Length: 130
Image 1 (cartoon, rainbow, N blue to C red):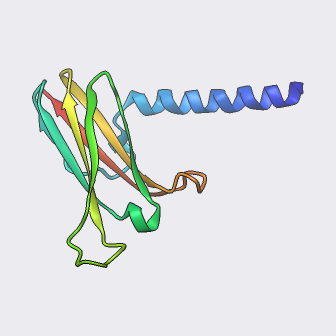
Image 2 (tube, rainbow, N blue to C red):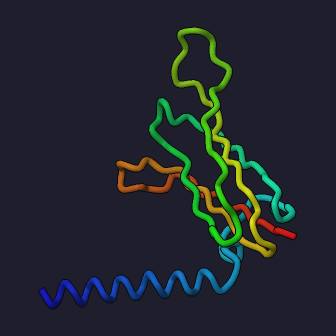
């Protein structure tokens, strides 16, 4: 039992260390990023992503700093399908609000939640708030 607790504590320490390192600089320092979003405090902005959750099971999830941003809404919009067609790609629309000036990142993850949340695609959007 003590060994399991030790392994857990070492794992927890590694995760916390990774979070500290990640927060020290921009996520984009080590990964390709999308074009930066430039907004003013109080403004809403959207991120639209291709989606086909209805037939593939992959869903877009988002990670962001709630000190700088709030998620106003997220919705699925169907693509142009003829009657009777299924599995047509559409888009997932995220609407964010800029709460505080500064710089932050939005990370978008395309995952199948029931499949150990394996990431199929990762997008990073730098956000500059003035």
